[in-house]
Amino acid sequence: TSKIKHCLKYLFLVYLLSFSACSDNDDEPAVEKTAIEIRTNTTFGQYLSDKKGKTLYFFASDANGLSACSGACATSWPPFLLESSEFPAGLVASDFSEITRGDGTKQSTYKGWPLYQFIGDDAANKSNGDGVGGTWYVAKPDYTVMVAKLANGKLYLVGSKGKTVYTFNNDEPNVSNCNGGCATTWPPYFYGETIVVPSILAKANFGTITRTDASKQNTFLGKPLYLYSIDTNRGTTVGDGIGNVWFLIDDAQF
Image (cartoon, rainbow, N blue to C red; front, side):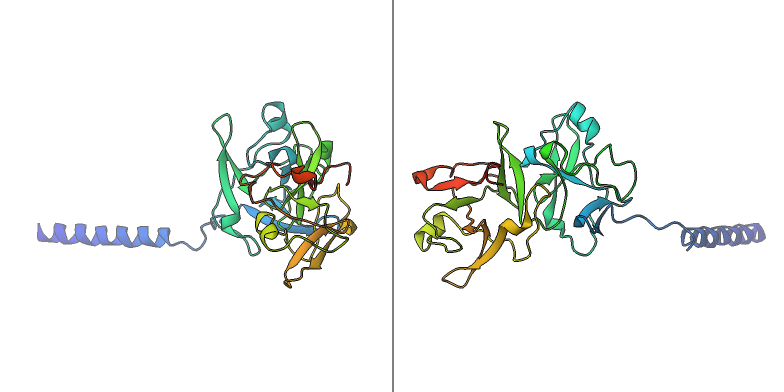
């Protein structure tokens, strides 16, 4: 009986060692940890894609941070959902989030913009959706400004995170006359000195000035750009027309 017990213990130990060896097998395929990438080409520079190289897009009608693309639109522009919370160098986790769509499904967002793919991109590294309808643009990590769409169909400019940008009629070319309390209510908009814009816009129309306090401010056609402190939500245009001197930038000026 003691011999049998000893043999059983031995067999059980062999089984445990074998199981452990199988579990630690270095030949097991690696788990895919990153479902989004930054890619680069000569046309767009840096842009976002999924891990298979399929380009991601922003939709101008989504400036408020919600998806305005459903039904047949979502068939042509499938919503994108991240499979991982890990990101490659150059992307920050805090810039990504999720929304719940009208049908209850989830969709990933970048800097508040819902992300999509395009059914017309039949292979990796294609960007056939850029500019479609004047409202779809390659998702880039570093837009200085983006294009948004008003309810009346007009396009207008917003900052990289969807807040409307304005110009001040009392400014001079490349000079801001909004300082002190004015600049508290109308914060000067500055994303960066490197200008990156959607393909519908001319990069040469944008620039940077140095303000009297030595801070920087982006410009459009020499007009300093501002946000409006009362526009607490993305995609709102409360500041348009105030005092008949503050105006958003619509597509008549592009």
